[in-house]
Image (cartoon, rainbow, N blue to C red; front, side, top):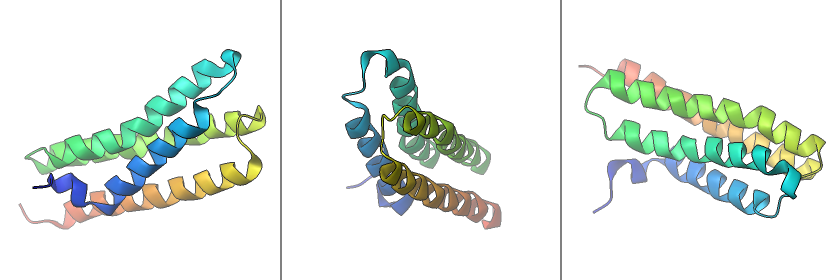
Length: 120
C-alpha cells in the first residue's frame, strides 16, 4: 500500500529533481561545497515537505508545508544561478533544471489552490 503523497505527480517530479541535483553536485570542487550542500538541502526539502504536508490532518497544516515546499523551490533558483556562474553546471543544464523548477512550482501552487477550494 502506497502512502497518499506517493500518488502525487508533483512529489515524483520533485523527488526526481532532488536526485538530479545530488548527481550534479556530487563532484563539486572543494571550495564550493557550501553552495552544493545548501542546494542539496533546498532540493530535498521540496519532496520532504510535500510528503509531510500530505500527512497532516488539517487544511492549514497541509497548506503550511506545501508553502514551505514552494519556498524551497524558490531557494533553489539563486543557488543554481550561482552554480552556473561558477561553471559548476553547464548553461544548457541550468536552463533545463530551471524549467523543471518552474513546472514544480506551478504544480505546488495548484496543490495549494486545490486546498483552498476544498470544503471543510
